[in-house]
Each structure stands twice: as C-alpha cells, then as structure tokens.
Length: 337
Length: 166
Image (cartoon, rainbow over all chains, first blue to last red; front, side, top):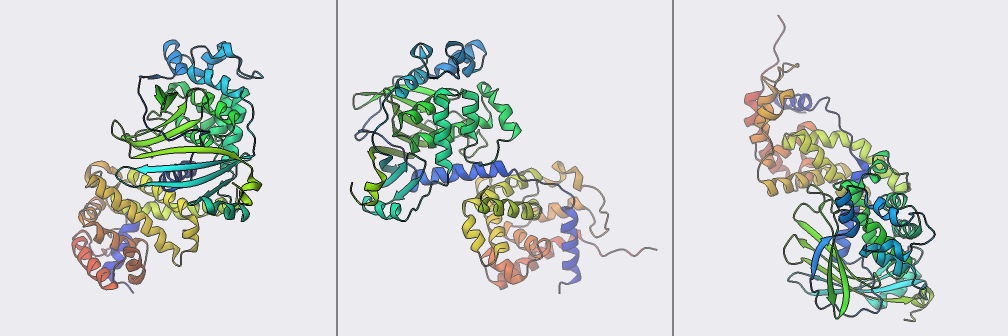
C-alpha cells in the first residue's frame, strides 16, 4: 500500500503523460532492426559476399571519385536517373543493349555481366574474412543457395551439418532480394526498386514508399537507404549468379548519392561504390552522419571483392574480403567439398 | 506475414503507449520519447525470441527502454530540452489540483539523478513493486527504497495536499 505522498506522485505522473498520442512506425522499426542485424552479422559472422576466383585483396588504388553516371546526368539535366537511362534504352526491354550503357559505368557493366553464362552448381560457398581495426582477422563460411537459402558456419567442416539440419537462416529475405535483383535486369526499374526496397517484408509496399520511387533522383529519401541496403544483401547472397549481380548494378545506378571510385586490386580493375548519407539512412539514421561504407567490385564482372565500413574520412573500422566457389548443395551436405 | 511477425506487431501495439509515457518522464521530451521507444522496439525485434521467453517480459522491456535512455544520456550528457521552454502544454494549472504546477513537477523530476528518476517512474507511473523495480534497475530492493525516498523528498515540494471544496 502506497503512502498518500506516493499516491499523489503517481497521480501527478499519470496526469503529466495523459492524452499524448503515439503510434510507432513499425515499418521503420523493422527496417532499423534489419540494418542493425546486417551490420552485426557483417562484423561477427553471418553475411558475406562472394567472389569468384578472387585472391586476397591487398590494396585499392584510388584514381578518381565522381558521382555515378546516371546521377551525373540527372544532376545535369534535372531529370530522374532512370529516365536518363530510359532515353537510351527501354527500361522494360528484353535485355539491356550495349548501346544503352554508353558512358554509364554501372549500367554498362550490368550489360556485360548479364550476358555471362550461368555458372555450374546451385549454390555459392563463400570464405569470408573479417578484420576489425586493431583486432585479429576472423574467417567464417557462408553458403547461399540460388533459391535464397542461407547457411552459416564458423568452421568449414561445420557446414554439412548446417545443411543436413536445414538450418536456413535466410528468413526468405534473401530470396526476395535475389528475385528483385533478377527482375531489375530486364524489368521496369521503378518496379524493381520498389521490390528491392520492400524485400524485407511480405506485405505490399506502403503508399509513401511507392510515392518515393518517382522522386528517387532527388536523394535524401528513405527508399535510397532501403534500396542500397537490400541491394548490398542481394549482391552478397547472389554473388555467384551474374543475373543477380547485373540487377544489383542497375539498381545501385539509380541511387544519386552513390559515388564510384575507379581503382585496381592486384592488377584487376575495380569500382568502389561508396554510399551517400541517404543510402545509409541519413544523418539521423542507423549509421549516423559520421558513418561511411563502401563495396568494391571487379570492374569487369561485378563480383564483390571487399566491404569497408567506419568513420567518414577515417580508416576502415571493418574490412571484409571474400573468396567464392560455386558448389552443389548435395555435395556440401555430403561433405564433398 | 509470419506468426512471429504478427505476434511482434501485436506486442508493439499493446506496449507502445505505456513505454511512450515512461520514456517521456525519463527524458522530458515527447519527440525524444518517440525516438527512445522506436529504438526500444528495434532492440526488442532484434531479440524477439529472447523477449518472448523472458520470465518477466514487462521488466525486460522496461530494462531495454532504460538502457536506451542511458545510452542517450551518455552520448549527449544532458537532457535535450528544458521543461519550462519546450513544453507549453505542461505549463498550465493542474486540473486535478494535486500538483502545484505541472511544469514545476516535470522540472523537478528532470533534475533528479537518472537512477532516481527511473526508479520513481517505474514505481509510480508503471506501478511496479520494489522487487520488480529492483529487477529492472538491476539493484537491490534496499537501493530502490533509498532511491525512492530521496526522489520523493525532492519532488515533495511540488506536491500539495488536495484542497477541499468550500
């Protein structure tokens, strides 16, 4: 039993907070939770991206840093990046043409990648090394199936058990992201962007997000963040599939805040895609205004080579490199790899 | 939508208002309270299975909220606003006659050390027992008693006995 004084305090508190409406933004909560999980997995072991026949990354030589071609063109003309692209190539054409990609590094690369033959196997095995600044490097194994399932093990020998027990940690999200990326290769880019942005959900996209697709060239929108984050996931989960890589490249080319840095890694040409503030959730978003992240890809195949994240303008706090091989899931389950 | 997602959304709907009120009394700003509760729900979603399995779900969730509040406190080192300048809605005569002035009470509450503030908010807004409050605050019941007594001593000046109608 509370004393009269305590009862008065309780009544006063209830009076202070009475009648203040509040409706949590569940979509934003779920997106933030995904971002947090993604960064945590990136650091501790869970998500990785694949690299076909790529050795250890030793250095990236920075040559230049410019806005992506569609963004440049959009800024120059004041038009939607996708519209710029559409003026040279129908966005719903059966396949992107080489002439459509002139002067547009990511779209041009997407054309080449989309023409690659489908590799053998039905899954991609990723040997992932994560280095945190000042700490030891950690190596883990990711296994992504082409239909979007995901298996993880801290040891290579532990993977067969994960597959045998069907310990799929993909939650269906990778499958939807892969589907969105694949759709982006030949489908309408606005539709593809919406699919990718909302891939974490099974419900229909909300009206406010749908409305943002048409204004994506303006930058600073939530959809920039959603497309970037999920495209990064798709590039991770579908690294072994050229169609997925091509779709991701087309989607990332829509984002006005992404800058492209040309360089080389071990003699191979690279493109480093650095996310802008909007792609990272804005100054008030998950990453905060001081956070920066970038993914380096092979400039000829689109295969991701390296992820870096950390303070803007400072040394990377997290560096992830990948080595990828195509495999058959049945072989992994049988320990034949 | 999966069953787990449905359960989570139901949980959010059922707990949002309560957490929002608690967050406001912790920080004194409705907008920051919005953010604190949003972040609390993000944390809960990331650990949803653990939250579902918690012996005392209420205590677990309030603990997360208080941790979010403390994290903000550590990062910014002060409260975001002053009760007398940013909350005109509280600077009105109290309709219940229980409080001399809402703004005075809120100001007094916000001047309490964070630990005392959290303790009295959990005890008298959330209606938690000393045992529950101790579980959330991860301290002994004796500490809850002492923190509460000190807080009530500070807040007492803002409270007046109920006036009798003539």
